[in-house]
Image: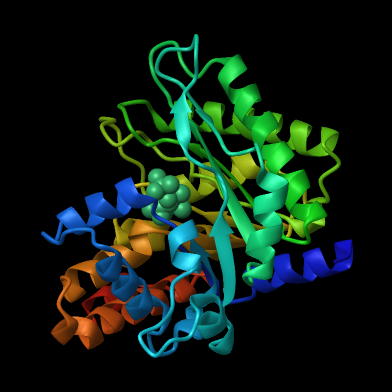
Length: 340
Ligand code: 5MM
C-alpha cells in the first residue's frame, strides 16, 4: 500500500454526506450501554446488536466506515457472513480499534495513558488480513484543577504518533483520537486552550514520527463547555470556537476531521456539526465518528428484542439522515419532528 492508497482510503472515509460509525465499545462500555435497556451483555446480544446496525437499510448512504472491537471484527451475521465482508458488500469500510484502553498514568494522579503499543505491528497485520482498512486509537485528556499536565499530553501524543506510524507501515489508515473529556464544570474557553495545546503536541509528534498527514484522519472533541459548566454555548458559538482552534492547530494536509460525540445528545451532536459546516471557511472535510450520538436512539428502539429489529434500524437510519444532512449544513431542527 502506497501513500497514495492511504490517502484515497482516508478521503473515502470522509466522502460528502458520509461519516463513521464508532461501534468499538469494549466489554465494559457495551455492558454499560446494555444496562440502560436492562439487557445482559452476552456474546449473542452483542453480535445481534451490531448486526442490526451494520445491516440497516441505506446504511451505506451515511456510513463510510465502521470501527469495530476485536470481538466484533471476528463475528458473523446470522446468515454466516463475516462482519467485514458483510460491511464491504454494503459499501462500508471495516475498521478496528487497536488500543487496549486508557489506564492510570503512574505518578500523575487523575490522568490517563493509553496502552496497546506492544505487539501492535503483529496485531495490525492480522486485522488487515481480516479486512480492516483503517484503525483507531483513543487518548484521553482530563480537565481538572491542576490537570492536564504537559507531561500527560505529550506522553499520549507520543503514543498516538507511534501507533499512527505503525498503521501506515501496515497499509492501514490511522484515525488519531485525542479526546479532551467534557466531564467537569470547566468553561468553553478552558476547553479551547487545552484542545489547542493537545493538538499542537499531537501534530508535533506525528511529524517527528514521519506520519503521512494525507493518509490519516483526526478524531477530536469539539470545543465545548464542560457538562456541568454554568455557561452553556449555542451551536454557533461551539462551531466558531472549534473551527478557530482547528485552524490554528491542524495542518490543511489532513483530509478530514471526524468528531466524536463525547456525551452530547444526538440532537446536540447533529446541530453542532451542522453549524460548523454551515460556516465553511476551512480546508478539511468536517464529519463525524459518533458512537453514542448515532446509536442511542437505535439502542432504545431495539431494546434487546428481536421483534424490534426493524424499529431499531429505522431509528438508526433516521439519525443517520440527519447527521448526513449536517455534513452539508442542511440539518434543521424541524427534521427532529419527522417520524422514523
Ligand atoms: C464507541 O465508544 C468507543 C469505545 O470506547 P471504549 O474503548 O471505552 O469501550 C470510543 O472510543 C468512541 O469511539 C469515541 O469515544 C467516540 O464515541 P462517542 O460516543 O464519544 O461519540
